[in-house]
Image (cartoon, rainbow, N blue to C red; front, side):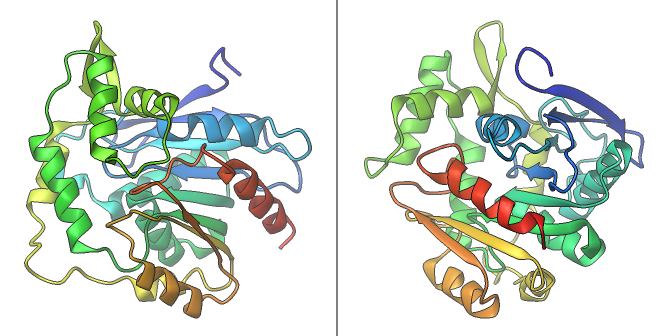
Length: 293
């Protein structure tokens, strides 16, 4: 592994975009590799600390692959913003897995990443042996999506990383369990450093996909896609302050998947940071229980 604990892996999409993934650790017989999928504008950096924990676990280490979607992180920007689409991105993930020789894995999907997991359950069900859905479910609350769109369209531009940290602290609000170190990591995951100036690490054209959503109409529900996860080990994590995944939807998910493990994270909203508190240990234990299924 490189000095940062991972190796960069580049591959080509079907439409010839150069895409990137971080690969942590090595493959182990009898142990599922983990594929990590980030939120709408986020990238593989979101999973860095969790990936290091899983890849270097003292008793059950496993390979972790964290993808940068097209137009995010170090993956190439698409010439046509309409390809910033979860179905296209799901195809990109399958292409990356094939290039890495990974036929099946456990998946961890945050927000949009969880939607892609559900799409993959329909496209390639045999590839998914376990899944963690982080603050996402078959019903996406319009209130939360409206807030995300408003933030992305009107977010102030920090002049320094100290400004970026304070911006994330303000977004979290007073009812937060996150620490100064958590906000520091978050800021450096969201923004890339351009001569000391924080710059959002995604293609600005990605925002066109949000502008095209009519939030005055009910958002489509993905219960049929969620049903595709019925036969695998499943964990769902919800931020107690989340406006994207409601407590009611989480309860309905539990009813439809009786074996699902549910976690509600106090003092966090959308989406909980998976490296905080007891989450790394609980995720590692869940993945270990899924290895032999």
